[in-house]
Amino acid sequence: YILHFGTEGQKQRWLPLMATGEVVAAVGMTEPSGGSDLQNLKTTAVLDGDEYVVNGQKVFITNGHSADLLVLACRTNDRPGGKGVSLLLVETDTPGFQRGRKLDKIGCRAQDTSELFFADMRVPASNLLGEEGRGFYHLMQELAQERLVQAVRAVSSAEAAIAWTIEYSRDRGMFGGTLSDLQNTRFVLAQLHADTAAQRSFVDRCMQLHVAGELDAVDAAALKMTTTQLQGRV
Image (cartoon, rainbow, N blue to C red):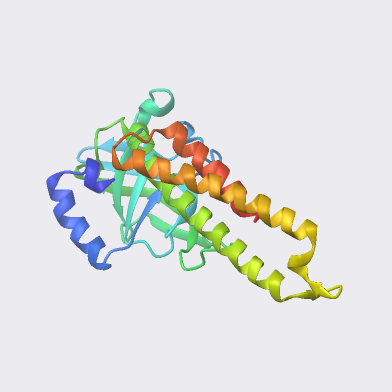
C-alpha cells in the first residue's frame, strides 16, 4: 500500500525500516460488525484542523499485536458505501491506540492476530495514504496480491500433506499388506492429487496475470476460496 499509494516522504520514511525488519506493519480492515464487508466500516476519522480524530475498533488483525505501523481503513466522510473510506498511516505508540486480546488460532502462530481499539486517537492529516475517499478502491487493488499469497500457501500445504500421506500409507502395515495397497486409499489419494494439480495450474495462471498487472479481484477471490477449501479437505 505504501509503495503504490504513499507519498515520496512516506515511502522514504517507512519502506527502508520495513525492509530491515525494524518496523512491523499491519493492515487494519476487518471489524466486528462488518467482517469482510469493507464498504460498511464503522471506524471513523473526523478531520479536526490538521489532524484526524479516530474512533472505533478492528478485529482479526494479522500482526496487530506486534505492529509498529498500521495501515488503517476508516470512514472519513458520510458518503455511502466505499466512497467514504480512506486509509491512514498510524504509528501504534499514538495516544488513544490500544491493543486488545491476542487471539488464539489453529495455524500461522508466528503471525499474531489481535483486536485493536481507537479512542479519540489523533493522527496527522499528512498521514493520509493515497486519496481521501478512495481507500476502498486502494484496498481492492492490493487485495488481489494478498489473496494470491494465501492461495500459494494453501496449495503448497496441500501438496506437502499429500506427499506425507503417500509416504505414510506405503509404510503403514494393514491386512497383510500396506495401507497403500487398498484400492479405496488409492482412489482418495488420486482424487486429492488431481484436485491439487488443478489448483496449482490455477495458481500459476493467476501468478502470470499478477506479474502482467492483469489479476483482477474476481479471479483472486475465486482462487483464494477454492484453494483454501482444498487445503481444508486435504
